Image (cartoon, rainbow, N blue to C red):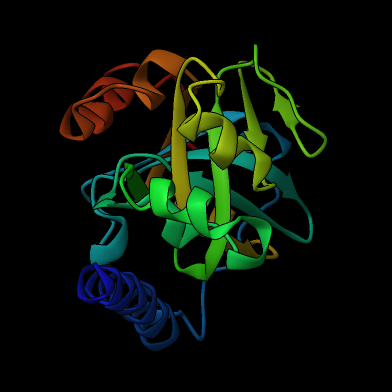
Length: 213
């Protein structure tokens, strides 16, 4: 059992380290600073085929913040694989018996972006709420461990997505990329976010795009 635990822990650390290296190595030093657009927030940001950054190829991002200082969002269509739920929860927050049970429960995790890869966010349907839950229109996001325990006990949200890291842009950076036709927008659709086949998410979101800047 201990060998299995160590194996899964090493896999998780490799995933996190790999994403961090990619983010550090490929972060743009100089970028076209575009005109600020307040309309980016609360939409899907969808990569076009003109985007050359391999990390974001055919990516769908829910944009949660966008102002003149920058923007950030969560990628929703890049699954990393399944790991024991226990590896996402601080050991000090559970008993040994609880952790033994949590190691038996696997959960699919997603790459949310190259920034702060240890940061855990759970995107979920709006009927669930805890102390840290924030509602963003058609979906909500929770960042405390209670939701992971609730998911393990079948008391969590109806639908959810566990995401590591996030995608972020500096002042004017995202707008500059949009002016180069690297990204387009569409309405956030929960059905696309929680689509079981992640490959279909980009296709469906792209088909629904309504704005090209």
